[in-house]
Image 1: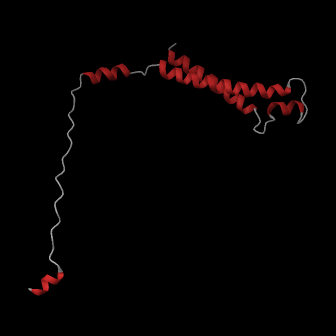
Image 2: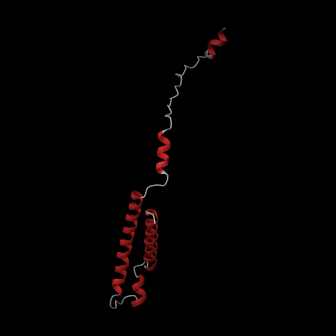
Image 3: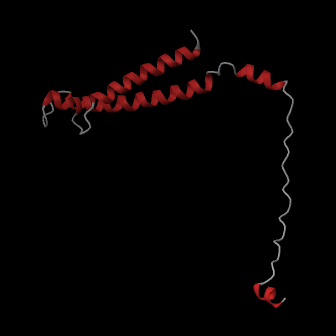
Length: 118
């Protein structure tokens, strides 16, 4: 199994766990704890459920970012070596910069008063 496959499997697994952890939470703060103990009652460890989900969301997102950064630095692109070998033997192309001629002065037209005098 290649390094690319291992990183892809880990990234997909962590992504699915992160989606699950986010979907279980309630956006208003109740989340899973409100469905077990009611709105205002805290029975046993129900309050700690939201703390656990909050910490797991942050942990999974940190792991996901770390895996993505590690995969981008350790996994080499397939065909990268072939590209560099192909470019090593290529002739260099000389670039020329086109030169534009200087702008010409506009032609002077006789004024309308001078034409009528002739």
